[in-house]
Image (cartoon, rainbow, N blue to C red; front, side):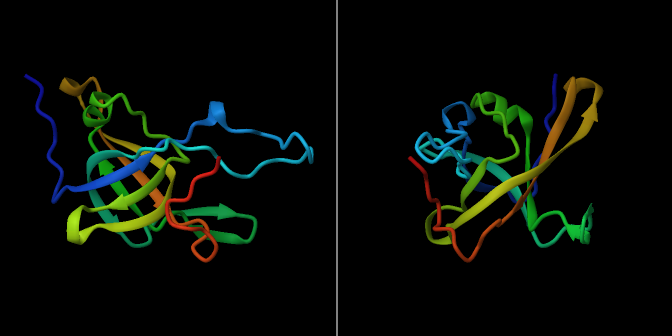
Length: 146
C-alpha cells in the first residue's frame, strides 16, 4: 500500500501550461525574437500548499545575490500525474483560491525542487514550485498571447 504525504491546508490553484511547441520564436515580418509564450486557454485546477514570502535561497547573478522567488506552491506529483500534467518552469499561476477568497494572479514558476523521496513512492512524493511575479507593473492579470 502506497501512502501519500498530506498537504497542510491545501488550497485550489489554477495553472496554465506553457505551450512551447505552438509559440513563435521569431516574428516573420520583423525578423526579431518574440518574447511571449503561448499558453493553454483553460486553466487546470489542483490542490497545493501555498507559502508566500521571499525564500531564503539566493542565486548568484552578475550584480550580486538575488532572491530566487516570491514564494512557492507544494504539490503531490501523484495528483499532477493523475491529471496528465507535468509542471515546468514557465507555467503560469492564474488564480489562488476559489469563491470569495479567490485571488487572481500573474505568477510564473521559476524553479522546481523534488522532495520526499521514500522507497515506497518510487521517487519524489512532493514537488515545490517556486514562483515570482516577473513584471507586476506592466502585465495584465492572466493575459494571453495569440
